[in-house]
Length: 111
Length: 120
Image (cartoon, rainbow over the protein chains, first blue to last red):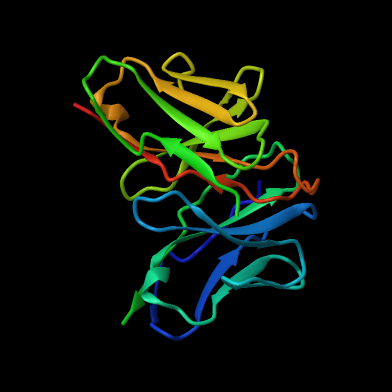
């Protein structure tokens, strides 16, 4: 699986949009971009995933660049409960493939 | 979303004893489940892939005789930490994907709430 690079930490003011970047310059054509987050002492929570089109759900938006070498997770109105470690993972579309986690970005939402 | 349940959520055991952790997919079937370990302030490290009806596949450096994995049904995988030592104290997390669902090969994985193991 392609390696991802994320900033180790970020702060965001409560109520503002949180934009979390991820670089995946070696991504292959069949690899999807997944985002998970982990709140302290809990299991990871699925947020969103995409291949090449931008995606939006009730939690977040995922913007993938045209060359697919980077993406941005957007939390439109961050709340204190969004404080967590956010992981960007690229993974091939195969039912047996595992998810390998990098170091992620520790997002702190500030009141 | 789909639910993966782990039990117990927290366990303390004596050094030298064995501990079993259960991972269940509650509303879907999973031919494959995954076991992770997470030490404080570190990321999740994949330990092994649990395959229903066959042997588990272990990541490099993970002792298969120490971390016994059984995946006897499509909704249950167990991880047994044998002869536990203090250095095995960690946060163990399982995940599973719906292998019988919509048919899409790129479905997300769902994670359990984790098991905090403390070996004293």
